[in-house]
Structure formats: structure tokens, C-alpha cells
Amino acid sequence: MTTVPHIFIDADACPVKPEVYRVAGRYALEVTLVAASSMRVPPEARITMQVVEQGFDAADDWIAERAGPASIVITADIPLAARCIAAGAYVLGSTGVPFTEANIGDTLATRDLMASLRSAGEITGGPAPFEARDRSRFLQALDNAVHLVRRRNG
Image (cartoon, rainbow, N blue to C red; front, top):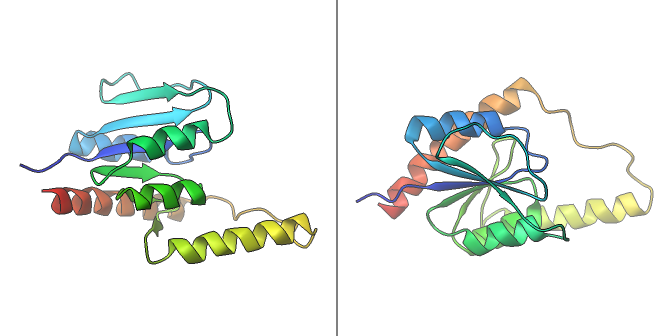
């Protein structure tokens, strides 16, 4: 019997929630949005909202404690991605780029370098704007992730 993936969304700043709902609906997957405050979610039994206590990394901790080999985690939070990868989860960024064991070390190092440069006043710009091609890439990547997680847990 194939294990059905469960999708966890680090929901506070996630721009691809509608895309996740669409893919999850296609495959009848459960989705849990996790955030520090409540937000509207579609009135579907497979989609739930988990509000965590206000606190530093409370949502990250909640997700990381539940992530495992049958999980797909959607996040832009690199430290959370590293924790979920260590737990065996498939982790996907909102632009459709997966976080993997092969790239998470470099990604963490780059994040730390950029934080240092920002604190020194060297960088004033933010991330690139989210575009339609990012949504398209995300949809394809999430579809691929569902198939991969099903195969590896089947």
C-alpha cells in the first residue's frame, strides 16, 4: 500500500497556498497550514489550520516535530528546511526549488553570509518579486514531489 503524503505549509508568508490546494485536491492529500495567527482556508475537510502560540519559531517547531518521510513541507525558512530534511521530509521552497541534503549546507551558509552583509549595511534590496513563472515552476515541482514521496514510501 502506498503512503499518502501529508503537506505542511509554513503559512505566514507563503505565496503559493492556492497552488498547494489545487495539487492537494487532485491527489486527495491532507494539508496543514501552520501559523502564529488564524487565516482563512478553504472549507474542505482535508485542509486544516493549526494556530501555534506566539513565540519565536513556534510554527517551525510544530512543523519540524511532525515532519517525516511521508511529509512534504512548503517553506522559505532555511533553518526549518534543514530540520525537516534531517527528519526525512521532502522540502520545497515557494519558488519550486527543492531543499535537499545536497544543497541545504550551501543554502544555510549563503543565508548566514547575506545576513552578515545586511547587518553591515552592504545590502539594501530584498528578494526578487514573485512572478507567474515562479507559480508555474512551483506547481510542477509540487506535482513531482507528490509522486516522489509516494514512490519512496510505497
